[in-house]
Amino acid sequence: MIEVSIDTVQVLNGLNRLSNVDSAINFELIAAKSRQNIIDRTGLGKDVNNNDFAPYSAAYLREKSLTHDDITVNLQYSNSMLGSISFDSDNNSALVFFLDRENSEKAKKHNLGEGGLPKREFFGLSTDDKEEIQAMMFDDINRYLSQI
Image (tube, rainbow, N blue to C red; front, side, top):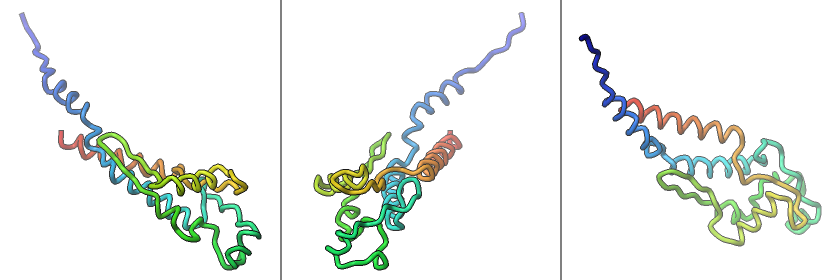
């Protein structure tokens, strides 16, 4: 009888290593980059869809002794809200959040347009951000697979 031996051990070992592929992804870097993208985009006065933020109200400008010519709407008057954005990660996830409740509530009002504020949706990931994160993940996975 003629036989062909099919060695599946190498394939099965490779598949077992693939089950750990999430360990190859640098979730800390993804979280840090996501945080920075939110801060940078907001500093330019852009929302998650790359639209300009709604202008500050005349009452707000009077309260702060500013004019529309003086200021870009970037939610950074004191920088306490954006300054409290932080991030964390573990072996399979990334998280961007506010360090304290006060700034989290302030951000929610801006993001959703609550409490008399116009909607300025800044706290989120844009399509470009998501594509960048996916590319980072694919790079990490490809690097991992090249070592198997």
